[in-house]
Image 1 (tube, rainbow, N blue to C red):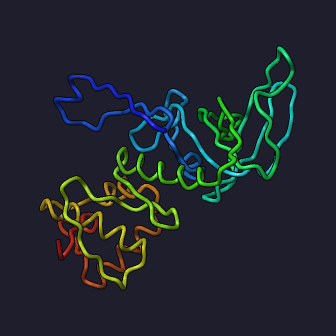
Image 2 (cartoon, rainbow, N blue to C red):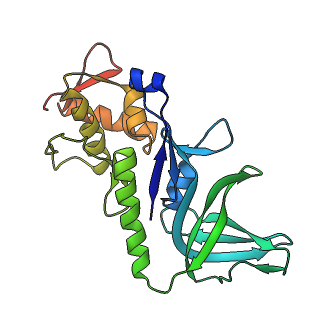
Image 3 (cartoon, helix red, strand yellow):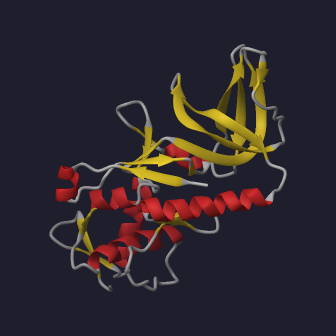
Length: 241
């Protein structure tokens, strides 16, 4: 399961700045770990949330033993396989656990960068015997990320913007693609507070989308009359909110 620990300075509280949170044993997907931003201290963060211990569930695609560690390749089908390192217990020259290719495992550890390659340094690797744990893990990912980041996932594990607390759900045009709907949803959430949104803020809200996809979606939304420019061509509002 996942839990949360946080701290906030008086200055941050008074200025209502977004606080950096410490996340402990946060359930994640491989794609989220591979796309996490690297912070100055050498750690990683998703948005303003600093990652400490994380967990992933996937199948082992390959393994390679070295003198001091075993390297696994773990795949959860959300992105390229993730490199996982497990140190060998030098006292008895045996790994902490035994897992072979084709085995489903749950890995708990911390994300590091070794020679420019991201790798999960495993604190624990546990073989999964009940495949219901795979579904359970994905549900935990959805729950944790909705609460911590205000984002949810669709059935294809694509990230979508979640509603803000107390924000009524708006009905998006069925003719829009998933990405176009995500862009319009964020713009509408700002328009409901009678403020426009800049392109830079839109990118921050939709950091899981490419700039090209955002620009293409904006062009379509403007041409279809769902969105209009306000003070300049870089600020937007929804025509309906």
